[in-house]
Image (cartoon, rainbow, N blue to C red; front, side):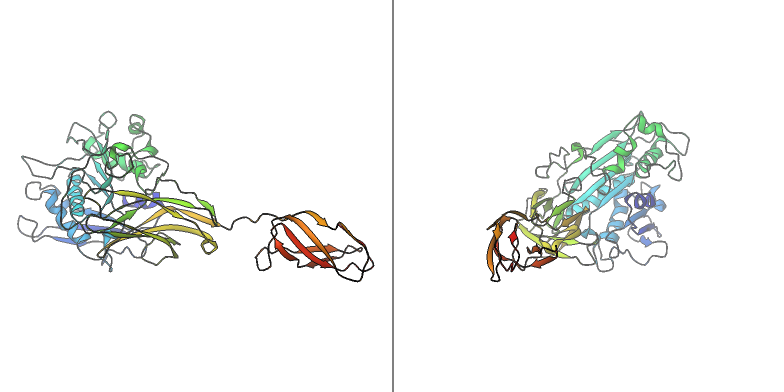
Length: 452
């Protein structure tokens, strides 16, 4: 799935695998999190992002001794509880995807992020199946106040999944029936989602992607991963999964409140499904919608242009900033930044946003680039020349040229006159600029007769 995501979004994001390594004993206290495949650290500085796979196969079948939320704490501490190459992974947008008990694990990670006031762009749950209460005590997946959008895909029957309040729920019971003991209906929900990432793939590596699933539910390119922030910006996210506390978004997704004195992260970002023109001209105002939230202090939100979508390799220029007051816990504000490009902004840019307070800052980009063009110069036009004819004379004679869109000397498009003699030889001359509608020029016609 990880490689399919990088292929779909067209970005060469690094893929890391974290393995939960059980040690002796029956608790998670002594267990270790190991970074696999010869990697020494998670590095988001080169590309501005990463895909991280959480491998907890060593404990996932021991539901009594290893509740999913306990394992999640160890993963959370490794991923977000320390810096990686000098950066916090909380500085960039987050999408959590989990299957079966992994939904409970991700719910705990989302909860811990809520405790710190970190917004999560999306939580995707695939046939959530917390093991409880007899054979385990997994956390029941819920949708917390920091989740902007939640989508859930489930079915009932063998190893039954469940709906989740606050998410947009897709019941696949009629579409997915299972094809074998290994590729049963519970496993195939994962395969179903893989098919919405790799739109032409016939398998996820283990089970076959069946066309009939999407024929009986939703078109393959209009569900699942197509709701991600990276793809298909014209596909509207269902309001049922959008956080109801985002100002003006019309979201209907309920959220579970989380109160904490540690909610010290500043958030700012873009809804990738908002509309911003792709081409503008110098002097044309552009409205850029954004969201923000800081539940403990005031924040400063800055906007910059950039050559790419990596916030860790500098930016081109700052184009504005605004200050926002602290918001009540759970509230997410929205605004429109109004930018009027100048000639210094001519070129193609990504727009970067940074929300920061005295302790922390987060970044986001609007993924579709904006091209700023030089404003078109209206062509000059001559309406009349006075006098309309000049008699022969060795002395200079003043003519007045009337028209429109004349430019003064010093302007890149400064007006010039082209005067031709009886032999049709052209002479380029600089006139006296009086206004955009009047020029003057002192001309000597000598033995010729001037006619205009």
